Length: 253
Image (cartoon, rainbow, N blue to C red; front, top):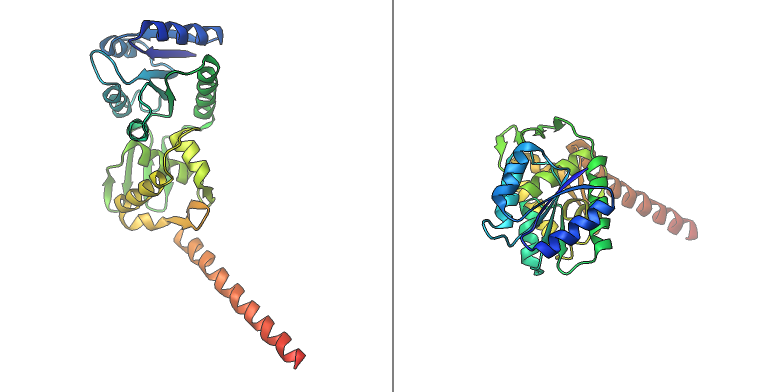
């Protein structure tokens, strides 16, 4: 597997390269964005380690371009940076980063994250198109359409919707969604997920109601008829319990 390292600090780049090569990966390193772009024309890597602070272009801009290019939209990206504030992490993750590694970091942690991300990426079966009710998600074009037309989603909103569709009818916990969409160690507020669900519902229009909140658990994508039956069950259960209490009360009298 080929891994590209975009890092202007030669010492860090050499450490990363040495560790990855010892773990059996092919590696190419780049100090400048222009050299990285040229390499992409030759070969698309299996994973990119991307520093934010680069001399000729901001790493977040590079990430944005990767996610807008249909050839690189699905390439896993780990942001590697000295910036550790929650806002910095959210910016990178919202633009499409799959994981975040803060400097300084250990070699074992780097290898572990690379392996986990490649494993997670390989486990996702790639399909051209996903459909649910009137939602059509085209993975090759990275587009989403509903009966109302095309939806302009951010990268994370797109990935969140795709994961919900792939697991339709399953109640996904908040922790599971945060881990799958934002990375295994994202420590930001859980409201990050809530806000993305809110904006996703709004952008999907009437279809947004298909994303259901499961109180104190997480979220689920359900057909409306299924959701109505779920809402009715607790009511029926309360009625049955009430009748049972009345029956036993009469028996005591």
